[in-house]
Image (cartoon, rainbow over all chains, first blue to last red; front, side, top):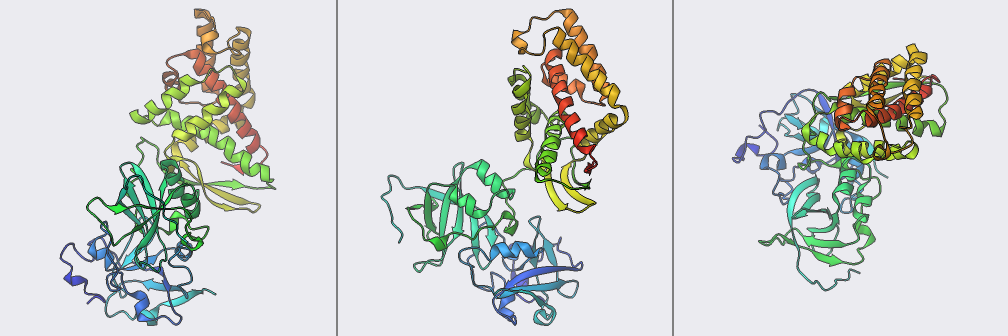
Length: 128
Length: 338
């Protein structure tokens, strides 16, 4: 049902019961334009090392930001400079899958397997 | 390029709080007892999990978290820099390796602010207060604003806000933190009051301070301030009294001011004043009168924080009147409406 095997997570309920499907948009940095499927992989799917203070469910979410300007800051971090091709805007709703907006203005999104990300997301900013 | 220096003692830090996690952890907070370390992922040919860590002072870290400085400034605030490897955790934590001259590419760009964090910082507890709900308030502006107006208006507003906030927040811990400020100043007049308002401001929890949330400079335009609704309403109420009954408010001020001056209660500190019961009786009556006329509703709280001393309370109220009058004069130009 979900794009990533979050049903297999046993350490917590995933997605959390507080996740919602109200209409919204989220922004994500992508490494190529046109976008590729891998641009929307979670940290878990990318095989990154999970920090001790984040749970597996969050680690298996697709990380989005509510505001474009927050992503511009990410682009200025030493290991991420020059890595990105642009910013994609993703519509969030009942068909895209549940998400949780954190107080930091960040969105944890668990895409449904049935949701065609590449067909619904659009590039809203291209980096030179 | 990286020069390692000899360590006198090995220091280890614990992983405390992820702050940015994008393509793996990019920024986290480490800790050694109460010392905070900001740790930033850096490119390295030797390891994919290398971080540069800078010990940071609490007030500077707070400034960063409240977006008053960027990440570059936070790291540069530290004289010492270290590197750690996130893959090399020991039982004691992560070993800090001192570096004297990190490569330029290890630093972030300017204008990377805390708004880019995507994991919550758990170190702030919600400030305690009663009846101090914080909300955005639009202040309508008009006319032509000089650059000086942009500093004058917030300064005048912030002084009045700091004073009333201190009197409104009755949480015991906050009261204890501001009580000393009311005692500390000699209240001889003039410059002795300048630090009073700054000190009060410094005690307000950061999320309760006046902050500019938005600005639309047009005629008419708008400045959106985040502030306590209770305090803003009290300032606004007093400004209305100035608007409607300026002569009466000013007469009440003159009565108290001139009466205290005549009794030689103004130019000297409280310890230097030789006063009698008649002096105190006059000051109490005239202070109560001024408080009513300027719709100042916190006289009991002011008296309590002033240790029950009417002369100190009167001096502080006179000082507050002068600040409020300056704010009224600014608003009276029509450039802003509370």
